[in-house]
Length: 512
Image (tube, rainbow, N blue to C red; front, side, top):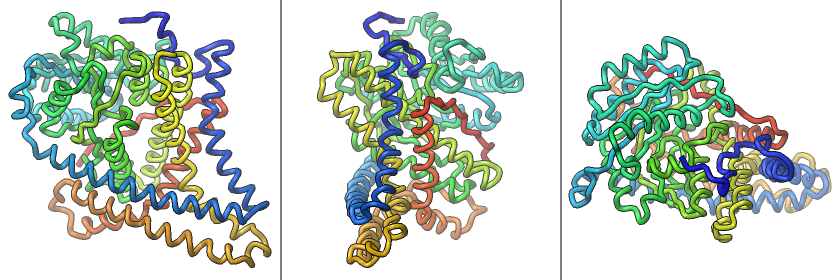
């Protein structure tokens, strides 16, 4: 594994990993997202008291921007849906006939903590049912030592039932309390990847350049053509050794049994990833993704000391290869579980924690700015664009919904008699209402596409359940504030004060 002083900063996780001037600089970068978001919200509140007219104009500007942004994103969502539906209908194996695909081996890593046997077994069945020779697939089921004996028994049971069907199947046990690691997916799959190299790749003399690693969450069920589609994109990439590959995560394994709140948040997350697939210049790896093993090995695998390892691996690779790295959108789905719990309150708590973990991806901003500062070989234009996209993205994620649906209306409440007597005070709700009502077009697009992505309705559910899937989108304004903006603000404030977040494992409920 390459570890030169030239790239000593690759696996910096937080300011406390550094010392001296570097530590101060990194700490300031960590504070930046929270400073911008809280500063924007504080400005709105302050203006609402001191200059309610300016606050009102800003609310109108935000409303206009929201409308144009909704139209822009809805167009991308529609295009990606059409492209994904087209890709799902293709015979990708037929498209591989004129390519040398026989040399490609897929290494699939499943991090495994406390999930039930059925969850793991369904993911394995998905691999076997895929339109790809399982003898060209190696599987690593990476259990956590801290999970206890029962989980090891499940892992060994899975190996006994499914292991012989693949080229290789290894159960590894990620040790607990390793210095320099935080508990989480990153440390687990990084350990599993190295174990795969030692136990599978080297003994079988498999070329690192021909091995594609799919890091899949334990509840991931691949669609039938996933491996063929991934192989085609890999073999036809302009520079396959400088590319990661991103499928579309659809959280619909349990969508019919999930409560309405869970369904809305699940499809909202999927739709955002679909939109990003149409903007590859803004795309980073997320959740389940694929990386060539050679590049993964050279960069030192996923980081073991961060929460957002799935996106951080892209920034690791971008820094390691001096800006010459990209994510190729596959516009082909994999299926995972919507976030549910036994009770509605439990589901709400789990969704909040999951989205706080996802929005904690703001920790990447400090890493991006720091590595860009340390690596002069990355072109300035690429640095500026990547940094701006990330900073603006996490800022708007927190501020826009809160301004539009909460803080932006303060001038009407605290602006005083003078402001309330003005024409602007009278027109503010009317103008904002026009723009926000027009932006409902985006919800209609989401509802229409969501209905077409839902798996076939089980016989035990009637048409009323299907109607719920359409009308559930009325919850979006509230969910954007409660389960997107507020968790994002929570995460950024934690970063601001150096109260670093640990990795929270999303509980998996046995599917029925």
